[in-house]
Structures are given as structure tokens and as C-alpha cells.
Image (cartoon, rainbow, N blue to C red):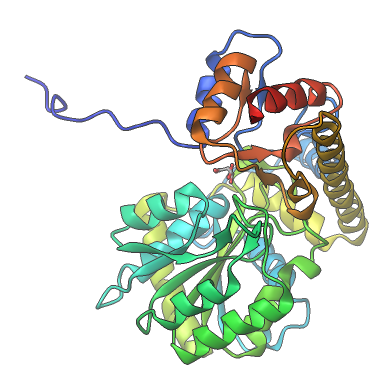
Length: 399
Ligand code: LMR
């Protein structure tokens, strides 16, 4: 008799499961456009120069591997606050922000969800339609009811801002609204500043609880520019949450370097929220890993390393934009029946291609080009060595 006999088999993860399938594919020309990972022109995940410099310094001066505090490495926490809310934010100085180092952006979302799950009554959650697949899964797993607000309008190839605002206006007070601060995943369509103003206003009117996910800061226009949605929520004096990640922006995927930030109403509130978040962290993983946070803190606070980081981040951003132009041109040159301008209108790592699940399966089965069933393709994994094959494959499944 086994205690596990009745355990059902869970389906593969819709994103990381694609990588699992990709790794088992023996075809040498296979291309993984599934997971959101930036690769350079050589098809490699880059080691950023600023990261390499800190790693060398750490390597030359090994320190004991003690535990970090439950909430994380203090210098990292201070640097994250400055990056997310601005170096001189009065909000931070007044002690109203409780920040914890988290295991990547996902860990930040999960810590936030863990604290909010303690609210009585437990609020509902709204995520965009569509959203990053793990948003819904993660909040459900944490015990929330999850619904959707309108977001992508396939006819207009853009955001249904009126629908989004109407859905938020109809939500119950206290509802948690998960928003993508920049580089919307999966669609690549972001709100403009005046759209954000409408979202901020409806969140204030309806007393909703904004929960911003900022996993791609720096991949649209720049570090400060991509945080402008956060600035609008701060200016409106709302209380809200922000999860962030350095997986993409510092190319530190496997080190799991992220954060959760609770913007509260007072320093006293922040202290109480922090205490609850620490209990959540302690009962899941005790305290976070230290290496990546130490690297990130050093890069963020040393002026030369910081300048080097911003240059390389700009280069990654520009390369993705060049890939978008080349992919669009390549598909247009094939004379296909379709308008491919959306590829260069979208922003961030992804293109929401409009391909159906059947077409995505054909891409995978016939051409070894792996994307998500939703039609999402990772632009950041295309390079001069695989773009012709990707264009050929998309063109062949297009009609
Ligand atoms: C993605 O959307 O592909 C990334 O955020 C990686 C992940 O964890 O899903």
C-alpha cells in the first residue's frame, strides 16, 4: 500500500513545461521561444559585465555562508526601494514601505499573496485577460478566487482600456488587482500614462488593492521610465504592492533575485505588515539565498557598475527591438495575408502572435520552434542564426 497511490498527475507547466519538452527534442535546429529568457546573438544567456566584475571580487574574497535575515540582505533591500520608488522618495524615508528580498518575481508575488491570504474576509483577485499563466495559478494555490478584467482586444491589436476601467469599476472594494507595470506578459501591449491615470483613479474610487508585477523593468524604455506606473500610484497616495525581479534585467535567472514591496499607510503599518511577511517567508523557506542579492546590491549602489549595467540593459533592449524589426520585415517579405505591424508595436520580450494553439503545435511538431499555446513567442531568444528558420516556420503555418 502506498500513501501516494491516489495522487493524480499534474499537467506540465504551460511555460516551464515547454522548456522541458524542448530539452527532450533531439532535432539540432530546435529553437525555444517559450520561456521569457534573454539570449544574445550567440544564443547564450549573457553574463553581464557588471555581474562578472562583482563575481570576480567575491571569488577573490570568500566570506562565510551564514544565514541572511528573514527579510533579506539589508543593502539589497535599500537598493531595491531606491530603484522602484526613486532615490529620494519621501514615501521610503517616512518608513511606509515594507520590502522583503524574495525568490525572484514569482517569490515576491507569492509572499504578497501569503500575507493577503490572512485578510478576513479574504478578497477576490482580478488578473488581466490574458495574463502570465502563473498569476492565476499562484493566487488560486494561495487560496484566492481569481477572475479577469478585460485587457487585450484582438480586433484592435491593443488594450481595451474602457473595458479594463469598467471591469475595475464593477469590482468589490478591497479586490486585489494584479497589474503589469511594464512590458505586459504575454501581449506586449502596455497602458499609456493617461490610461494609467484612469486605472489609478478607479482603484482609488473603488478602494481596490493594486498589486503591480514589475518583472521587466528596463526592457521597454529604461529603468526610470518603466517605473512610471508605480510613480502614479505613489502620487495618488494609494496603498499597494509591487513585486520585482532581477532575473531578466541582471540576467540572474537561476539566482532567484526579486522582491516584494508593501506600500502601506504609515511606518507602524509597515512594521506590522513586515512582521507578517517574515512569518510567511520563515514558514516556506526560512530566509533567502544570499549570492544574487549581494551581486545585485553591489551593482545597484556602485556608480561605475551601475552605469555599466544600464548600458548593457539598453543593449539588450535595443537588440530585441532590432529582432522585432527583422522578424516583421521577414514575414512581410513573404507576401503573407496579414498585417505584421503588431510585432514592432508590442514591447518587452514577447510577441503575442495571434497564432492558434493548433498552429503553435505545428510550429513545434513540424519545425521544432517552441512557443506557448497562447501564441506567445519570445523575441529575446531570436538571433541571426535562427531567425530565418523562425520566419520560414511561421510563414508555413500562417495561412
Ligand atoms: C515567462 O513568462 O516566461 C517568465 O516570466 C518565466 C516564468 O517564470 O514563467
